[in-house]
Amino acid sequence: EDKVVQSPLSLVVHEGDTVTLNCSYEVTNFRSLLWYKQEKKAPTFLFMLTSSGIEKKSGRLSSILDKKELFSILNITATQTGDSAVYLCAVHSTGGTSYGKLTFGQGTILTVHP
Amino acid sequence: DGGITQSPKYLFRKEGQNVTLSCEQNLNHDAMYWYRQDPGQGLRLIYYSQIVNDFQKGDIAEGYSVSREKKESFPLTVTSAQKNPTAFYLCASSKPGQNEKLFFGSGTQLSVL
Image (tube, rainbow over all chains, first blue to last red; front, side, top):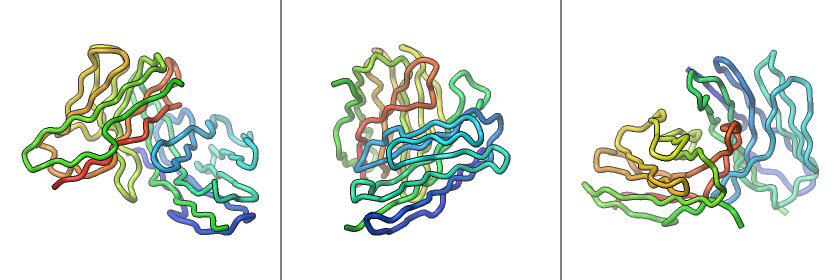
């Protein structure tokens, strides 16, 4: 059974801190790993990673994938209160269907205090 | 602005009652999905539809039903057979060939009275 595990489950930091969120996975026929940010209600897409060692960056957020050790990290530097959200990791695998299969982790709740 | 609209934001269900959650998109996406989110658990796929008039069961389809009569609309009915319906329900869509990059609605919180 495909499995995606995120850690920590929750994290409380102060503005300016740097945080690292972790995502490990066990899936059959890996295709890609994705990060989403869920503020309030609707998750929004952050990154998609398909190759090991290539860092994706968007402003203060960056992410990298290690396909040998089966994990990804999401880094947020100089955190701001607007970074407070649930961060979701998902792995896309072949799943034996045309749609493929998307398996989500439990999410990490990040709270940034002023 | 293009996007996905879910309604209502909050819904209460009585015992034995069927309720329908609405999902409309104007992104012109072919594929649409319904996910269930419970505290401490990952999103779980209920149903998905790759094209109009066609849909497939996801991992937790029991107690739910869907229809896809129009490209823009993918309503989810939570039937009385679903014994634990209290959850946050998210609708999503995706572009052709990008099934992993989902665009989500703002969700419906369903609670049982």
